Image (tube, rainbow, N blue to C red; front, side, top):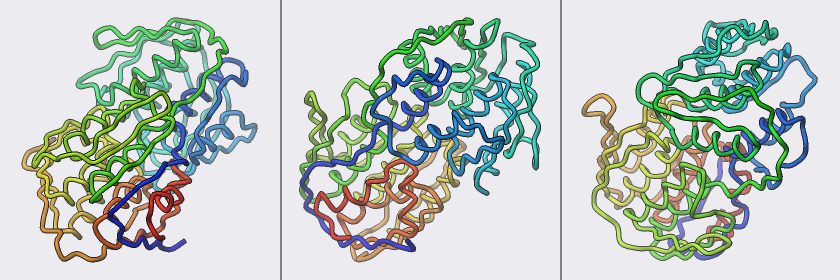
Length: 405
């Protein structure tokens, strides 16, 4: 589909019935299930394309494994196939070939995995050629790179004869995703000790244990944005839990300051409008995927924002800082970087803007993060099918709460 038109609608009500299960939890659970001997103990898997792909590829007998644009799948499977001693070629989309994987490959090579780059050093496609036997039991990796590198090493570490110590250097980013991995490993019978700057996993075997995946807080975040920007709203999100392993649960605290209150019951959460602050500061180090939800809300509501922890956005599905800067400029907002590592959102005047056309840059979060502007104006979303990566039922849910598409 080339484009999708959403008619402006400012009063929202209903239940978000297609909110997916957590993609992050699902993808980790699938790797742990495979390491446990493929016992079918994981239920309520996400229907996101990334998870469907992971479920298909983790047990693939084909030599060539195409992860498309799924970064998590690329990183987790590189470590999984490497430690298992498989011979696989891992490739993906043109954008995937621009996303670095060198730090993970360096760590795996040090451990004893034989890996070769097939095009450009440091980037996919790669060929995993086998496991030559464990050479070291400690590797070092920067803590401020993708937490998926660290999680990939953590999950496969127990399969190594001598276990593995992972020393994190520098500032640690996305800590909740590391904690999520450790919690899931514990559920499946393996302890990951995180002391100081070192994670230690002993040689051990995972044990099959029934596990039901909870609702996805990343996907839920967009409904907080819809609520904050609507003139009136009452939305119900089934399947999300207040006490969650997901770092993106932070959206509850962020949006409480931007105009959305969440009330939890045993089945989910009710979202309703509340008062908003005029400025906000937030560190996205532990929840970088929320930036594309929060910055559009600030821009549309006239809230000045000062943000840190957005460094990883440069190497996601697109350069997300550049993409946000370009699209939010269409409603008069500017993203400036007064000093390295600090971003300031300066809202413009949104009055008089009747229609906005959003480029999505092959990025699912650009489509969903900007869609809530339809509470204030007509919105056209280019290449709307990008949402299939994480939230296939998103546009159906948008219609269900009152919009005409």
